[in-house]
Length: 629
Image (cartoon, rainbow, N blue to C red; front, side, top):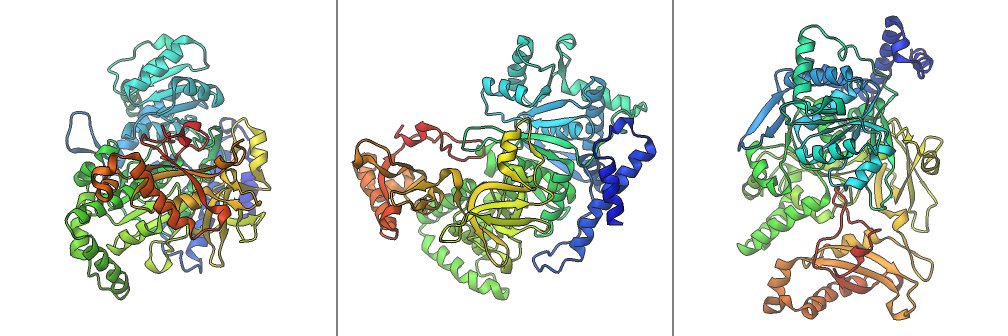
């Protein structure tokens, strides 16, 4: 059977979908379903102890994902959103979303956008999600755009991504792309604005998202099947996601339906997700992490998704919607942790509570939660129903994971990259399988190898599996440089243990070569330096070429935790020399534990925010991040 469906997939791999007969297309979709069912069957039969949840279903593509989920959970809430001017969440069911997606998709195709590359930009909202599914459901290729980019950068991505139309979820983005469209300097043909009461100028491609959706819904109700019968192939590119990492060089990652569908299927085997769950969406949805692991995974499992209005509204919105799942970057959890610790300290309860939590780490293993009353009070600020914190995007301080776990809240660390759809490893949600210092257990059906190992056994981490990208769009040179026989070279340095848990040490491109030839990984030093209560965040770098030999060596540019510094220094908290002495003593403690070639030689105090990506990572290539301000 396996050979038969693989032959069919190969037979139709490059065929024109709309030139195929109905019988041929049906044969293709049947083979794709058999392919995905083979993964489901293998999961069901797996003897890997960490594979605990085996309720996944075969989903071939993103069109089928929405349609099948709506068939199962039609009247259930899919999206929660606080509309402009409202104080409470409005609910949108699976059926509501399917109706809207069908309508919008129908109008997009009637505009001649079948096969087009369509950008989506804006804050996290249900309109963004519906636009995503209207494009991926058979219209064309979706290109999620970073809303923090400059007009010049967005113009570049229009050309790099061959973008024909852009859907703008807020007025300010509509205004930006409207000017780009009217200028005629790019290939952009259409700009579609959410919230517009009417089409502004159809001749110049300026449309209302709301009107298009309404017109499409009416057309579908009248029998139009343009979008309903749109054809998709699982192996086809469905999304181009431009990386916005710390290197400053954007590359368009090509992901297929199959990449994304296998990733959400495999991820749920380590993590229990139920239809009753509510995912809280706070990270930028154009990132693969948020898009796949919150939006797609939640829909796959019949859960709901609540959109946060922004970082400053996190606590207020969580208290309003009472979510059960939160996926975030370590910085957010570390801020939660620091805020809680400061509050406890002000109340004089920090030592008592932390001691109680330490005891609970032991008693919880025999089913006794002695910290529950205090934990319940603390967690009320997050809505009171949180069952799971998931951290990804960077290494998280193990003490932060341990703290939340002490309260009875599983806090998991996962690992992935845009190029791997993104997840390839995750700590399972059962206490006995969690490892605070590991990025996660390697996914089933995923291979990992470590190349060019150093004397400590750390080397570049490489992956091969069904979630690995198709390549970089229109960039064969970059594709060839990172892919070899299906193996994706991540650029991350680390190792894999005997139980297939992944450990990250640093980034290959960021490695500092000490004077004696030894490798120093700045991420390793940063993680330890940032544990100091007086240091908010930091970036480690090196200057080994300065003409002044006294200025050579490893530097750390850091921002202090002003409140903790004031508690320690009192009236001297505004004296830069006193602050420098305080943080220097913290660095000295760490330097005492490290060999000389690894020690921080210079400290730069920074008062302003670092220049960061929208994933909240400090941009290492930006020279200003090395400076005091």
